[in-house]
Length: 72
Image (tube, rainbow, N blue to C red; front, side, top):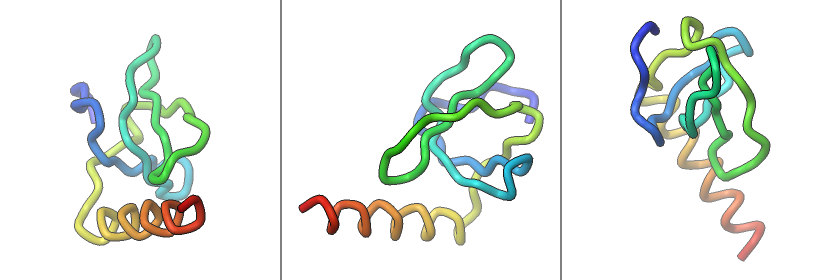
């Protein structure tokens, strides 16, 4: 993807085996992503990132709910 995605957009990093994450920011040539439910951010090539589809949105929400259940 060549244009900047809005912060907090849920995206898929196709270079990392379709790993999903939220757009947290941009540093140099990279987009910084954070996994649903929290965790360590990673740098992704913006050309290898696409918006998440419906299935990935559901997957992310389940991850967030599972993490919240473990913490609460």
